[in-house]
Length: 548
Picture 1 (cartoon, rainbow, N blue to C red):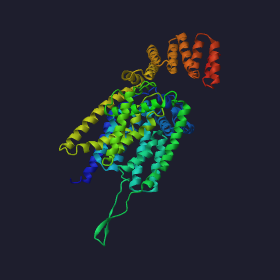
Picture 2: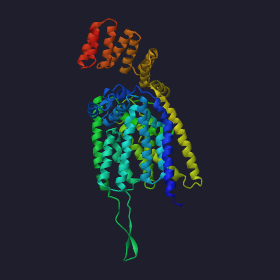
Picture 3: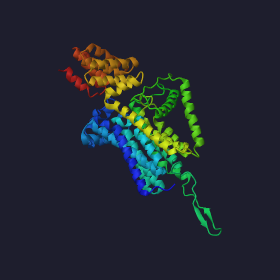
Picture 4: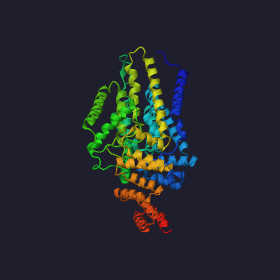
């Protein structure tokens, strides 16, 4: 086959960049009209005074000290502050920043893969799948997931710098990759597995673990003899990763301490180790299934209660995972892209697979933003090899690629539309999941913001019916009753919230207001004293109302 003329190749590469950009914008451009979501967007932007003030000296200091949102990610806070500094708490424009980062990540992924592998079309296909897969909608359309798109930006820059270092070794390129990795960890600590990924990339496509010899002339025999290998030794390759591993360890320790202090890490007596392992196997299988068939996607998937997972399901998922891993290892010598892709997927999910259970979700679409790249690589390089002997190979691959990407783009566009506001998002969540008390509670809160208080009450009641021990739903139910002047019912709801969580300051505050509304100042004063013992800032507000 004749080599492609340089000018034609440049035009083709530019066309691919253009197609990736246009298709990404077509799917996600609707976010410019979307509002905030009452799930994490509150703490990340529109109820966070530090972020709303923009980039201030106090705000920057707070960003590096803050453990809000159960994470230490100062770069994410600073990026949101910059948004508010630039155009205020305008949800549409903040959404567009997320979209811009996703677009840049798509183009960067294509560039990095092309640079690493030298393969144009497989790299383009991986980038297109990354851009348009419906499972990636959450990371882009949710403002609170700025940490996903921002950390991935630095993740890909790290890979680009590392590739440059491998091809043209220098202290500058090595240090650049290390600094970019450190910055990425300050956007989201999920990048802690990157050092392992660099070792995989050394295996393929960078081929640093493969012996490479160069023929040199032997004048005495008139023959060529092999020169010493150009690749570094395995020992040196591992040693150069030590600073990366050190950064990962530091980030992991900080994250664990922050999440434990915030109370978001589930204790072993709440979710047993056996159940965590079961959840991990189920989650891996779920992620693989949704990669092929992305249906019934939503913002929150309820966690199965301990002991409720059938053993046969866990066994089947474990067998699937170990079976695939076994065959990948067998095929890895001849098809090295399979080994890279599979262990990219397995490895990068480990921080969020559920062994250390953080939050109430079983799994989440956003967790696949980086891990799916591994599965996409397996497809992009595997399918052409599978059809290598077919005379219609190019036609079949071309038509299949267009059909798959078009279908994914349509599905992703529809998934994006659910993120328009809290009502559309959580109404959809209730349609595609069962017993989703978080979705019912947040739907009720959205109704309350719109003044639809009776609908809010019904939603809160539904949340409580599913999970009677969810204090937040009881508190929200009391607030909804209060807005309708049904103070006695409100008092009962607040008392129930406090019974579940005696330290629930907001419930004590609202209960105090409800007592005042029915003229019971003594009981309101009791709630004030409790708030004062919590050192709650809202205690003085309640006292002012009592003294009126």
